[in-house]
Image 1: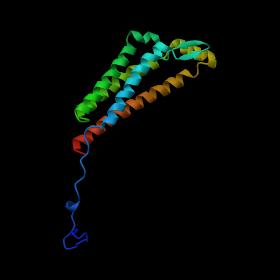
Image 2 (image 1 turned 135 degrees about the vertical axis):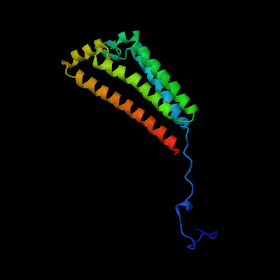
Image 3 (image 1 turned 90 degrees about the vertical axis):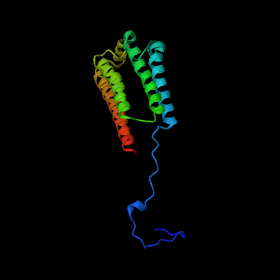
Image 4 (image 1 turned 45 degrees about the horizontal axis):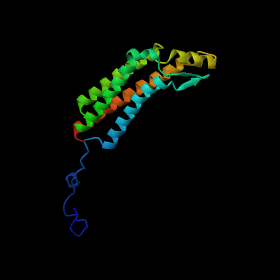
Length: 179
């Protein structure tokens, strides 16, 4: 025990109850985290649209989009919609004060809704612009690069989605425990 003079008194036995209370954990995500997430998602939406319209990859004077232009019929719009829902989800999560089990489950659903179609399209050789793939194969002189490249992209996409999903459940569990 510490006396008012600041010197320790050993007249009473110390117990864990003598420890100060832990500071309260801020339940609501910091606004900077939310703004950064919304901006990153907005940039991803803009990049999806821009790469189709600007055809930014140039090989021998010909411009190519990264993604297959045939995906505009459904899949590009699907990915833009999922990213838009991610923005809404991020703002709602902040407004509601942080992660809950329901929000972690919604986050998992959004990750699945984005990642499974992307990986499936990639593995079916439908995600990347076929004209771009052909032009790269002509430049490289081989088709050996496409399988390892698409496999690496698929693994990275799955790892990012899994990490994000697990992080949501971890934060919901921490909030449920009160710390």
